[in-house]
Image 1 (cartoon, rainbow, N blue to C red):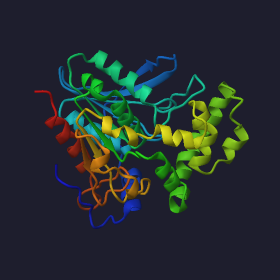
Image 2 (image 1 turned 180 degrees about the vertical axis):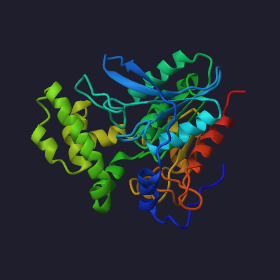
Image 3 (image 1 turned 90 degrees about the horizontal axis):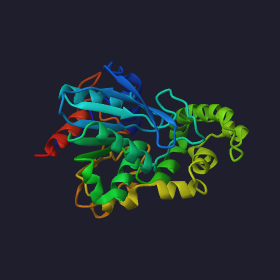
Image 4 (image 1 turned 30 degrees about the horizontal axis):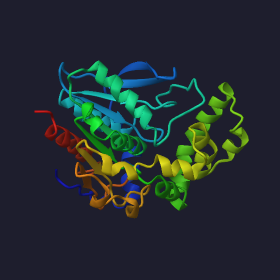
Length: 322
């Protein structure tokens, strides 16, 4: 797989992160939406791009407040479609413009959610090769599931890729709550997270969550301590960030897996990234010096998002069952 080289006209991690998210047109793929009922009787949606009969399936787990309209989903699933494969973006709870029915949401360590989604897709496509891509938060959840399942994961997946996954949630949370990050990225994340939480509180009054305090949250640490942790059985933000992180699970991965992390990612300190001693022999680490957070723009202005989708498909084609 060719290494990533950032274009000279787009210097630095912030520019490489913000440019594709703000400036690239969203690809208008022929999405087909399915409504799914979760094992606990909640509702989520999955957006599909159909392929040819018998072709593999690529499942993309999105990042925080992302979905099928995210720039990375369009570029990756668009490349999947070019090859005639099936692509699907299952939306985590509250995402995809579908409100929650239950007093819970989604979080970075929700490997149980990854499990039932993958098993549902496998049941729809018996005999087809299935691959998974996890982006940012979705990458951490996917990696945690892979480590927990160990060899059992090979019964479902032929290969997996995590892109810009914050494998140490505490390190990423601290980074996002500081300086420029807090005023740009965290403010935008909290804008939608607060809105969803306040809407859910009107439907499911939760005595453990104070709506006025939710309105006043200004950092991810505050939000995760006030909302994410109690909603999902954690004893506070430190417990959540520690137990939901996938880093300790990486040695247990038994499926061919590629981890892509730019070392100038504004969300993820380079010092928190894994080394070869932290992962199993089935994991390949790709840590280019540049690329930002799910950026990886290439070419002359205005640039293209071709390196990441091409790298994804090269890896999956190499690991097709023979």
